[in-house]
Image (cartoon, rainbow over all chains, first blue to last red):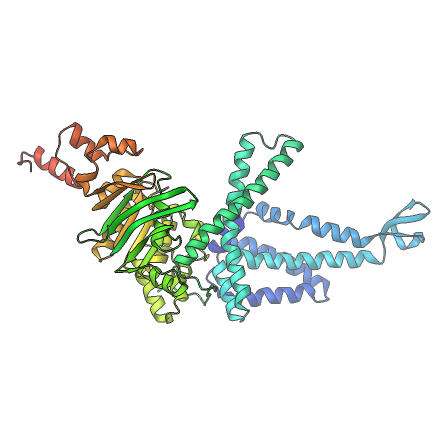
Length: 232
Length: 275
């Protein structure tokens, strides 16, 4: 089960209109990509603190969610700031290598750091939106933005079936682990290949069962998604 | 009235799953018909034939006097008349939010929005799931999912409701609710065909039975007709309901359900005359 999803339903501002949250998110994105750097810094701190406050998530768990994006962020920054050049003066910490110098580019370092701050600000803001907005509200937002039905349909079905997929994955994985399927690299690879095969087979079986269920509900090729009704 | 005339069905040639089945469903005073059979006896296959998702390789199925036609339009009409709820709830709930999913079939019928809202509200109330109407499906219990799956078909207001193994995977509370729900539906005039090998459940809820074994109907009738032959049930890999066991082994009267038993026995203990 995706824990991250639970916060979306239980946070302090769950009742806010999705449009307000959407506008706040948009505003955060504008601040994240405008040129004044200290504003971005304030944004990161403010939104992070607010996220922790409204979702009542522990700081440790919140920080741990950044592990997912950290490798990507670091790799891109490293790719930008490290460089090879024949001129020693262009670099911080130059290392002589094959007749050239390798190190951190003086010209690219500020750009790399700026990118890192920008990305971090955007991610922090998006986490805020994702952690405070229940899925039904996201659908409402998409509907009121008059996006094409196909996109909304797809989003809805993905959200529905990702959980079934994760559950199946975990069940098979747990059963394999119990029988020592992941003891070493060799068995792990073998088990993983079986897991993928089983998931694929399950998709075929489920597909047939779902076709029957769709027939029973007189499916005509379209999933209608309107705005949600408020509770009376 | 649904009538099967000498129906056979085979997934693979020469290996029939259903063999020459002839039966009538929906005669007077038969509101809940039970199809009892062990795993692999053909219960689900029979159901899929009843709603035209599978076509008999031999024989025909007659609904209200006319044989099932397999064109798209005719099948839609058939499925408005006969709704079916399958065993695995996850495979028949497509929307991520409860009330959206329940409205699905009605949107497919292009009904006006007010009518859809009204029917959904009513079903939510009937199945006692109003409190979870805005909940995402993945946070529901097995029993709740089952009720959402049933609600998604009930909104069609079909004359017949087919329930395939409705108690599979349910805890005692879920089973009790299912029992109550089915009783309430029948009281409102719903006709139900239910398949299961949960003998006690079937004994309590159904008023007519067909025992299916290896693709054939081996016995049919009412409570007192089908459950007394212990050997036959054992041959079919089934067992007697406990109320029948205490009737035969302890020579108590044959009670229709537990409440009946406890009520009678209690009044006997108090010194009243046994019935």
